[in-house]
Length: 505
Image 1 (cartoon, rainbow, N blue to C red):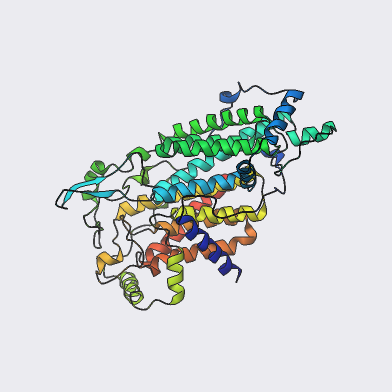
Image 2 (cartoon, one colour):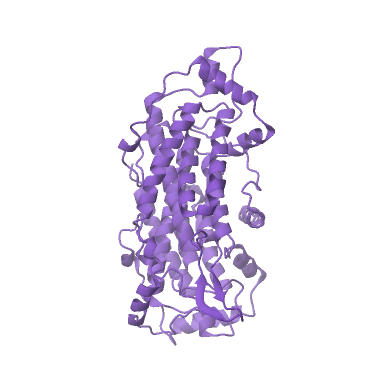
């Protein structure tokens, strides 16, 4: 029963989110962490280990009377909109920024359209706008990972700097002074020390990465980051110097993450010319996959399998081997299941197919698991840095799952059911890439494996959802069952690699 209630709530939230560009539609409770993780300064960043870049940040002294007066004046001038921002950002900055990024992914999850001549005929080109990147599942998985790694690494460095200073925030400081004009906090405390401010760190890291990858969102994300920082000042939880230092630190880490992204191989992932030299060399013992779109579209990201992974040492080592040959017992069984589902789906199978569809215009399958993760984090009320840590390992696992999956897809060029039998209809859009392995199955299994590690009491729930997500692709008739079963197995192995890395102190 609890599972059904959660799924229904998440499904309704997804519907609401997809109908608006606002990330504030769903109202979450104010989040007061159960602990502040002061020892997190000893944790190991995933990527950015260099500390010299922020060594020049000027550590502040004890607040002065002028500092106190400035904060009081700002609070006194707060507007209703400011108070709304205070409340919204008190729901957990890590989680709110994840919602913002999911919303951007949904907005840009639209495939380039075919270019047409005046008479309506196809020109042979698709209109790709570099200002509007297509946030398909692999792109989205990479984006979620880059954002989450930037958040986690920046907060580790933030906590290290906090441990050097141990400065109280305005509300705490004024109470310690015992003055008559105490600054009342209007949001929970999220770190033991005020400097640098953790919310400014997160805002700057998100702002830098989104601005670089989505040029049209630059003004929006900058405004949102400014509001997030101002909310902490007006809540009595940050001094101006805390916000300035946090902004600088977050930007420094984000720029290093972006430098990494320039060399991870994504720039070559859609190299159709190179793919055209590789594709003829691949031999198959089944109908060779081909684009089923009209007009035929070049395959999506055929070289994404060469993108650098975070935790999987060698993607090729996880190759599960070829799918069943045409006419084999397994081939025939899976094909017969597709034909039966074409006319005999149950209501439960329809529900599962719809709930996990995550197609165009949504935050994609990786985003679905980001949403599941954030709900778990709200439940346990972790500190910001521990929340960022969990999201970093979940999202990097899904990124690696995308890399391994795409390597297998374009190694075997396995067909979709409709290509084998045109009478098979689909209840979901037909993806423009080979079938074996199922991406959704791999995203789900890898995320569920990592979540099971962090929340072992919920492991059976996560694993059940992963299997249901895999089944959804069968019930939608866009994958043979073998694609999903093997996808879950390989996805679990990818998730295990992320779990192994998470055990490094």
